[in-house]
Amino acid sequence: MHNICFSIMIYKKLLLCLVVLGLFSCSTFREQRTEPSDIEQYCIKIYGKRVGSQKAMITCLQQERSARLELSRMTIPADVAEYCRRLSASTGGSYSVMLTCVRKEL
Image (cartoon, rainbow, N blue to C red; front, side, top):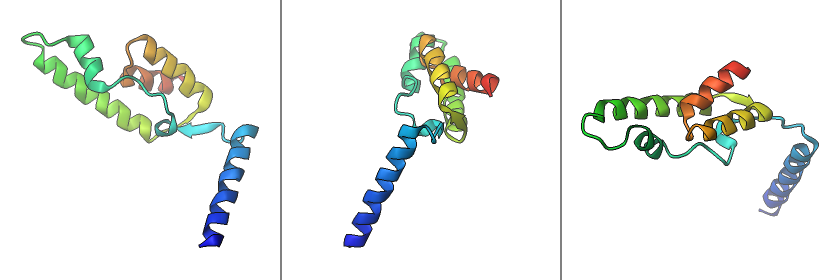
């Protein structure tokens, strides 16, 4: 048990050193801590709860979920992820906007 704890401590220190030195310049989207706003809140903000907007709301939810899934499977350089996250946040936090940005930047 002691050897396992020691190995984990060494691994964490090595990982921290790599991050500090910038050797982990790429990361997957799901590792980023700040993400666009919640999908449902975003779609409600865009389409509201008006009568007749149910179909548009369902489409919005599907597109945002699909974009979030695709982003979670991509490896995105940290600078591109940060730039596209800021762009997405400026439009309300859309995963679709972020995905489009990432595609254009890569």
